[in-house]
Length: 112
Image (cartoon, rainbow, N blue to C red):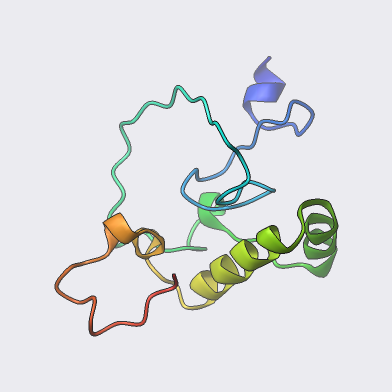
């Protein structure tokens, strides 16, 4: 059980930042998601896509080829958006409408 919890890859459990679409987890893939997270995390504007191991976006060609073959065009669209956000060091919150700063929406180009 300890290996599964820590993401050994065999149980279909992904150990990554849950706000980023990684490893086949992307918007629109699932019809139902059941969770029991701690809900105690604070995400601020200072947290950037790709700035830590948990928010790293894999970009190697082998990874991209495998995921594109397995998940299709929807995955590729999601991954392209995340890769661009990582290059630009965009705040994680900018990936979500609820996280956008209402005072700057007209002044910034957003990822969605």
